[in-house]
Image (cartoon, rainbow, N blue to C red; front, side, top):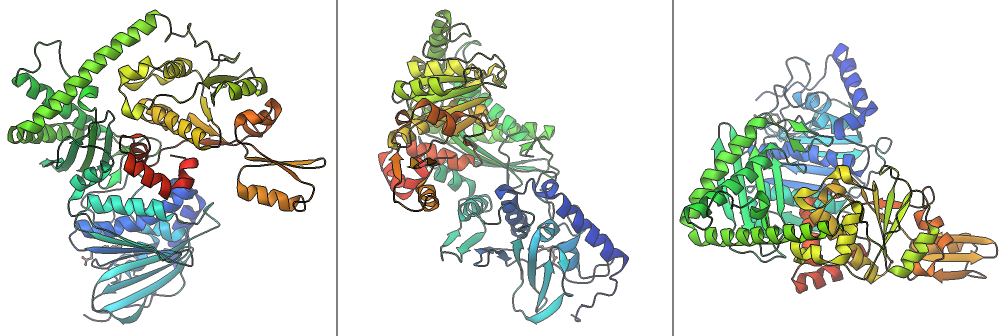
Amino acid sequence: MAQPTLDTPEYTASSIQILEGLQAVRKRPGMYVGSTDARGLHHLVNEVLDNSIDEVLAGACTTIDVTLQADGSCSVRDDGRGIPVEVHPKYHRPTLEIVMTVLHAGSKFDRRAYKVSGGLHGVGVHVVNALSEWLEVRVRRDGHEYFQRYERGAPVAPLSVVGPATSTGTETRFKPDPTIFETTAFDAETIARRLKELSFLNPGVTIRFRSEKDGAVSEFHHAGGIAEFVEDLNANATPLFRPPISLHAKRESTDVEVAVQYTDGYNETTLAFVNNINTVDGGTHVVGLRSALTRTLNDYARQRGWIKGEKEGLTGEDTREGLTCVLSVKVLEPQFEGQTKAKLGNSEVKGQVDSAVSQKLAEYFEEHPAVGQALISKALQAAQAREAARKARELTRRKGLLEGGGLPGKLADCHSRDPGQCELFIVEGDSAGGTAKQGRDREFQAILPLKGKILNVEKARLDKMLQNEEIRALITAIGTGIGDDLDLAKLRYHKVILMTDADVDGAHIRTLLLTLFYRKMPALIAEGRVYIAQAPLYRLQKGAKMAYAFSDEERDRALAELGGMKGVTIQRYKGLGEMNAEQLAETTMRPGARELLRVTVDDAARANELFQILMGEEVEPRRHYIEEHAVEVTNLDV
Ligand code: 0RA
């Protein structure tokens, strides 16, 4: 073909328009990438990546290379068709430049069959460009390699041909703007997790990941797709059957894919994706899936006479005990809802997923009766346990233990009855509990000391859990109830703060408590109500000068500030109990002076893995994990 016109004739009205557009993005970055913290930063990578994945979906790309460069930039290179470079009819500039400065999803050049816009994804790579100190793009197409560089979104020179090309593809390299983002340091683990996820969701692609900082390389390719994803999620659990059930069907324009496996455990892990986007808050597709599972299992069990009568039957919760599931749907015009746009709203999708899964699952059971029977037997056991738990609950309720009037005896409650003001400190042991009681502000701070280690709920069902006195005290104090009965409106404290010792036992107790919250009261974590108190490790004193240190690094810094070791007394706190009440209050408990870590779960797959490994039956992976991640385990922040 003829050499494309690379001079850019009309840097007039339209270029002013473009600059105004980029300026709008820089002025309100949060509107486009959600936030300017680490999450917003990684959103840039996802945005660029999504464009390459679109080429995969179009069947035009097989390999993607992602590199964290030594200069702090990130590059994404694909072997797709390359972004078109010919002069754009409306803007009279190369389309590439327009894609990098103006265009976004919904435009004529949007190749997407299934849109990702409507949520935070699909805002367009011009947003990445606008929020980058610089961005360089190379396109191989029509036998040429094209190059253009931009700074803060604006091209510094016209698009140019820099050499010949024998292949096609696009490489985008960008350095996030430090005047926009609070942090510009990419986290290799966060990126690697998304790449792995994408390689399961798009089984045709190979994604290579390299970090120039430490030379680490990895490659993700999973021909088995979401069934392999489920196997991976269950790597540290004991599945009831192999391979996972794998279903695929289409209803109207909606494409439904599900992989299902059950383990001998009691928890549910369902990861749901819409057009490759992780819908962590669920939505209509998940509702449809659950409805299909409950109905299909009940129908199957009734047909075989394993369930009789109308009153008997499996509840949704019964059919999800031990379930590990990945749901991936493709929806033409998805509507993403909620604060983080991570919930699917399209009402028609519920019925589509329900219908597709019901039909395919029933067919699967016809062909695999042994699996069908195993699942029913598992769900029936769950139903029995549910009934036993109900009886246990009724018994304790009658005893007044689970009612507001019957708060646990060891709870030192606060005076305020306004949950928005109130805080509950869950403290390890009676001795630390005593210190915390003296150090608290009794107006709004309540203390609940726990004796030793609470029951590991990763290995126990509801009925057994409720027999455990420590857990009952905890549930009663918090007020919401648990499982499907959880009612956030009854939450008695808007801050639930775990305050454990900074040693191995403390870390274990904290993990046990986090397991309980994550598995049985996930809404509490989702609402950001669970916190971890940060207690100091050292107290340094030199004459009248005194400092606390929360890590070894801080201790060394404080030592330097105090002028070295000479004359400095260093006290190392092995437990909270070694502090007096005033010390505990001024370092760990008092608002304004303390620092609390809010517990968040960004990544359900990772949290599930962590809890399976740390709390599950299998000893070997736990030992391995603790050896590999000793530091993270003591600072668990899931
Ligand atoms: C618009 C149209 C076509 C491809 C692309 C954009 C494209 C964009 C990106 C972004 C990263 N990698 C990409 N690869 C391709 C289709 C062009 C054609 O029909 O040849």
